[in-house]
Image (tube, rainbow, N blue to C red; front, side, top):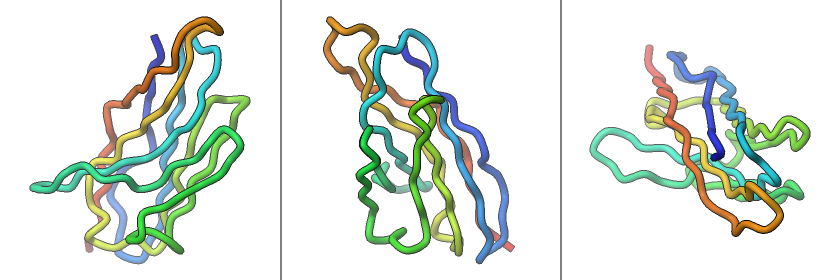
Length: 121
């Protein structure tokens, strides 16, 4: 089984920066696309950013120009650099990944437990 563990969440002031990390571990043949999603109180979970194995990226309009997603394939880790943070960015951020456990298995999707990001004064 593949496990995703997020880190880097916390409290930050408006305009500040934070970097989230998510490391995949377990039985891994290949980690394909990875991404970050978030869920604010009273709202549905939404896509923040995704990145393919080849490092092609896409972002939600609400975070373009402020957030940057990246990955280290050697470490099976994805990052989310968040700059110019706003109170509306406050949410639980979840890591997501498509991965194969063996060459013969089909690709499955996995979720992390989430990490809290709070932007306030």
